[in-house]
Length: 150
Image 1 (cartoon, rainbow, N blue to C red):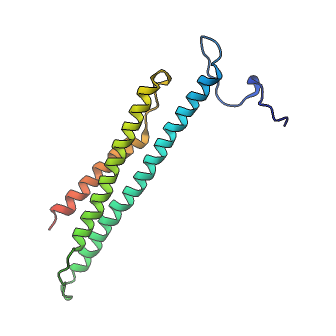
Image 2: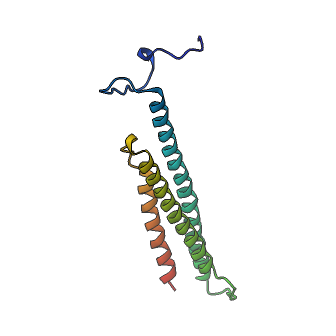
Image 3: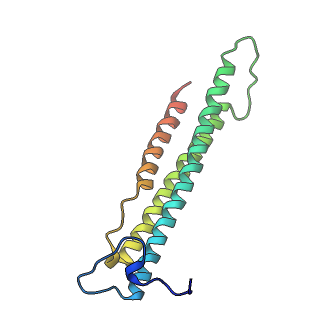
């Protein structure tokens, strides 16, 4: 280990062949910076997905658990300020709302990067955005099921 980078012939990883010769160092570092930024956006969206799924599933679990407890007719059920159904709706609504806002912000950030650095595109398709959209749809469905069930 001499502290010097390995010659181009010995470097690991895929080679990017360009028709106009080797890429200048500034262009390569910009491309890598954009890639790191895109991956950071994906990681942030996945963290929001994880948080939203937790809120949605916890809200639905609270609803089903207290629905099960209420099926026992021998116990009196006092009226509360916020029923378990209300708590479930709040948690599911928070999860869906947070996920929709995070997905919207994610798309705005990607669009801004793509417009500013369009010469480095096309950018990869984001699986995280697709998963986010599907989970938001399922969350809306769960919210409607809890809301409409009396």
